[in-house]
Image (cartoon, rainbow, N blue to C red; front, side, top):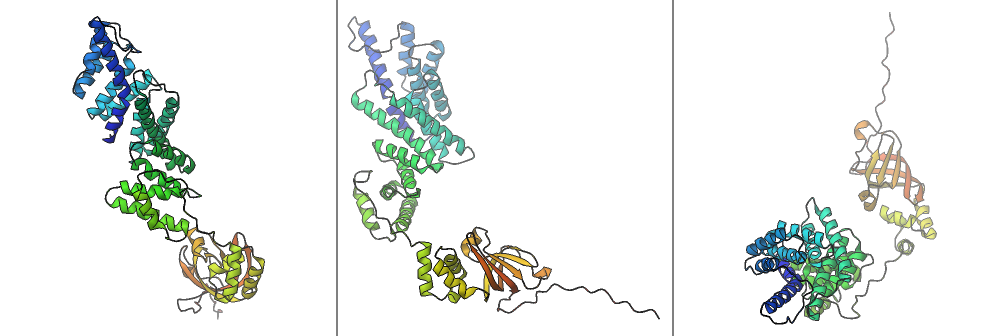
Length: 443
């Protein structure tokens, strides 16, 4: 288990220690014949049980405390202090670096009280940390982290302030555990690409933490920058995350933000100023009104088609440009291109999707080839010899007569196909014709 969990558990143990201190003070005052200054909510009336409990929690080593608390729980399984003893046992096992017994004890705490904040926080934290390491159980661990996080947030909303705890300590406990729960739920949502939920919970986690935590700031930045539409506050968080990163990770995180910035803003203008502003700020959260102007939207396909036919002769356009114009919805531009192509013999190179001796389907644009989608149907003038039938995925040079097209889904049909060699010359494509053998007349 991560070492940073030590601090978290010590924070979570604050309330229990306050209650135990009050219980010890009350007992000592009673033994001295003096009135107790604090009346604990829970009271052990059996002196033997009380002594066993106090002796256990006063052990100085984690191993000794764990042994004493186990003995107490075995002897007094129904003690009024059972939940408190289990909480302290959970902390003792963690301090003793026994991860499995820490997790097992957290489960025992929840059996005693399903809404125990400290056990829920420990389990949410543990399963999130384990899920972040990947592995075959990643999805199961994510589900567990999300489950304990959601249970923790529900329990936290109804949690009363423990007796003897100051308002300041209660707020600290509430914020620290809330950050753990929100972080677990938000991290699970991010892995599921539920960016809206991830943004909400991770932003809560970051705002609740007393110290900047890259474990929540970087996922929040990712949720903002991967969402559609993108949330420009993610640029602030990605800079803050880079500040907290170690080694090469610092430059890699900043480079990721830089590329996203250019894609969103259109240029890198203002990026360096944003980085300096975020790095100089003492606050993890962006200032009020923080934003980044988005680049103007690209021209529509119809507008691109109009511009293209104004600037370029259709016979000089690439196949991808023909496709753009003919499928753009701009009928005037499409007619201009089509009138220049119809019934014309054109030479092209395209990637084969499927092929037979008489018909080949091809992808003339890179996008369609990447999608394994044909946009050309070519009927050969003569059947191809078997050895010349192109393999799927290969590049084919050919000539064909443009005969028709459909704009959506886009398909251009060509006839009189001729296979060309690398120099653009026709290849002998005819399949061999087999004639019956001639029989000599008998003499």
